[in-house]
Image 1 (cartoon, rainbow, N blue to C red):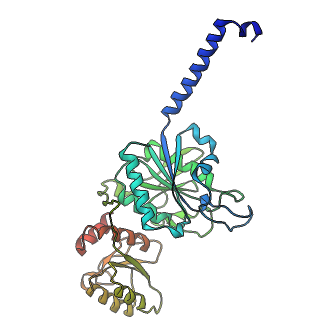
Image 2 (tube, rainbow, N blue to C red; image 1 turned 60 degrees about the horizontal axis):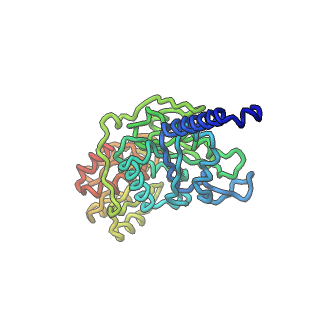
Length: 360
C-alpha cells in the first residue's frame, strides 16, 4: 500500500472495516467452539523433577494454566479454562477431595458453565476417582480423566499428549451418555472397568475384563463398544457437601493369613469390610471365623478377589447366605469399597446391597 493510499480516508475506513470484520469472525468462531473446563488435582502430569533424565519428581507442582500452555494447538478445537481443585499425588487422594470434585462437576453442569469436563489426576488412584465420579455425577455430559506416567519436566513427557487426547474425547459428540471415562495412552476406558496395570510404563491402564472401549489418535476419536450397564444406567447415588460416607476397609487375603486385621476392624466398629480374597473371593478358616464375628457385630462384609479379572460368584464355593456376606461381582476390591461406602448411605439390607453390586 502506497503512502497516498494510506492517507486516503476511504481506504482507511475500508481497512478498519476489514480489521473489525476479521476480529468479529475470529470471536464468533471461538464462541462456537465447545467449552471445556479442566479440573486439576495434581499428580504426575503436574509433577516436576530435578532432572529431565531421572524418574524422581514431586507430584502436583505445576499449576493447571501452565499445563494448558503446553498444548497451544488445543485452542483451535475448544475454549479451555482451568481450575485447581487440589495439588496432590494421587496416593494422597482423599474422600474430601472426591466430594469437592464431584460437587464442582455437578455445579458446572447444573449452571451450564461448560459442555465437557476433563480432570487431571495422578495415576495411582485414578481408577478409584473415576468410578466414584461415575456413581455420583448425574449429568450425561462428558467427564474424562487423564494423567501421565512421566512428570512434566521429563524427557518425552506423556502428559501433554494425554491431556490433548482427553480434550478431544471430551468434546466428541459420541462421548455424551457414556458415563465417566479415562483417556490414557490413546486408549479410552470405562470408569467401572479400568485398572492401573503397570507401575511405570506409559501404557499403564487397561480394562482386564472388557478391554478399551475406544481410541483417541491423531485428533480423532473412535469407539468400539458400549458398556452393557450404560444401556439402562442406574440412578446416580446421591452426594452433597454434608454427606458422611461410612467407613469401609479392605483386608488382603494371602496364604496362611491371620485374622488380626479383621478383628482389629471389628474393634474399630467399621461399617463395612471388603475381603480381597484369593481366586473366587475365597479365604482361609481363620478369615472365615473372623468374618462370622464381623457379621455378628453388624458389619457388612463383601467378598472380592485380588485377581485382576473375573467375577466373584454368589453362593459358589462359599455359601454367602449362610455366612451373611455379599459379593463384589466383577469389581476390584478398591472399587467394591467405593460402591459399598455409597450404597450404605442408602441401606444396610444385604439383599438390597447385593442388588446394588449387580446393578452398578
